[in-house]
Image (cartoon, rainbow, N blue to C red; front, side):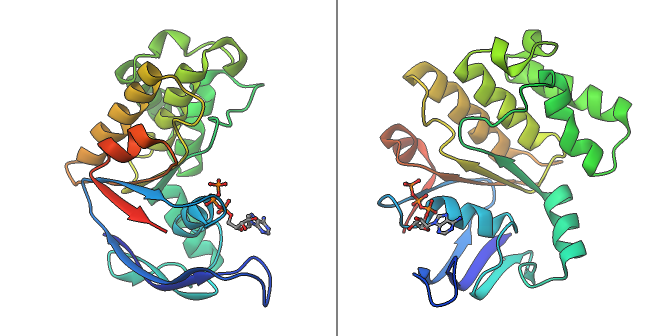
Length: 215
Ligand SMILES: Nc1ncnc2c1ncn2[C@@H]1O[C@H](COP(=O)(O)OP(=O)(O)OP(=O)(O)O)[C@@H](O)[C@H]1O
């Protein structure tokens, strides 16, 4: 289970402190939408949960272990094996094919290229973008690119999936598709419920999320 205890973060020493000692348990198997006014720290919270930023105070707990203050090597390992990240506007490498972008995190996690390819193709098919596998991101639509980004976040079967404004620039149909993919992902991680956290302003996502955490 993913949780935060007494969490605070500041980008600079003595700078504005975000989260005000936040304590929260994220429910496995659920999509939790993190919302709040612009600048309140929604994206920053995802980076802290994803162990890309270290809390100034408090802790990020994964299955009861404080992973946020673990040594760098441990944090990298946890990030590679247990966390998937969907960046805003998909952020796919324009020089790689969709398939290569999706399988890359699995290679970092130590999978063989063959196993990573099989899993990546399976996910792209499940997300309805299998026919785009050999294209570059410039040759797919915004909605398709965002589903590709979800596939990339899921390729290692992580326990935690973090998505930053995944429906930001999408029309309703595409937003529905991306949200459905994230909801489906919440249900399964090798049979164990997966924790999905989405930072969003989108009223549609807020309405359909299982839980809402307001910052
Ligand atoms: N790299 C950075 N260095 C210094 N300050 C930053 C950095 N990134 C963000 N901030 C500041 O931290 C605060 C929180 O930013 P963050 O992007 O997490 O907010 P947000 O709630 O996601 O905002 P939005 O809804 O506009 O995306 C803001 O005041 C922002 O200006």
